[in-house]
Length: 299
Ligand code: GRG
Image (cartoon, rainbow, N blue to C red; front, side, top):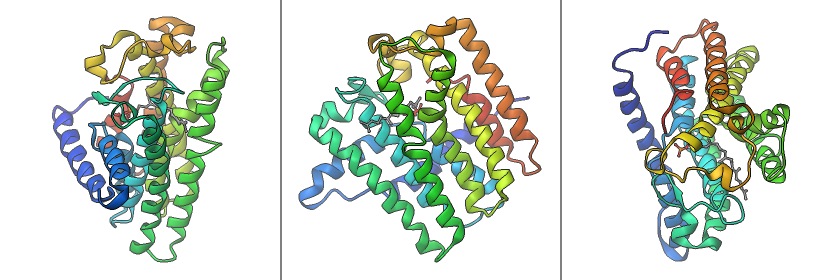
């Protein structure tokens, strides 16, 4: 696929618009819970790529959505993702002290506040998502979107995958088990990002399922790239410590198949995702380019 020359500029513009939406939903730092809100806002304001909310807003537009109802869901999804990063860095998990190019939340606010701010952000995400009913009262689409968000986050989604990841630490894994983990811990939220748009825009369940499959491939490619960057990147370029997987004795796609094998698989999955995405009659060339680019990202 030909890449438009100004893709980077459009991406920067759309990321800035997404950023503005996220800021609107952050909790105020006031009263006795000011420090809790400050810890949440510290991690939310750190410079993440904002891929999930951006993908959600773009998939909503792609299916003809024009209302503000997608915004609380975009903010909620980034909050759930940020919660996972806060907790992932804790001493009990990866014990990493840098994230998004800054000190990890627990390293600034202490471990107890790291646990609490992650929990609170996860709950706050649903408080924000529920505010979608203020835009569309009694909406069946909003109800479906809430069910989807909860399902992709919980035991059958990101958190379930992460629990298997932790349980398998230090043990050898085959490709099937590794893919089970990746599909849950990483793909689930990317699937949600691509499904919530069509769900909120009232698209058919068949199209929502196709977007789920696109998200699943994109998520696997994204996680394999993460594995590659953990070996080939620098802490400065990726904004978090490198060689974290080796430190935590984790099987990764790179440790199973080597760097060239991982590169080939990321490219294969990404091409498969694009082929499916392009088969839809609804079009969004920018989103298509973004999805392709995720497998090649350098941070
Ligand atoms: C509840 C104790 C407890 C822990 C939960 C769920 C969880 C910990 C961790 C989720 C697993 C995780 C961090 C998966 C990795 C997915 C991934 C590659 C994240 C990085 O996403 P980017 O690159 O990050 O989009 P930015 O910073 O750009 O938003």
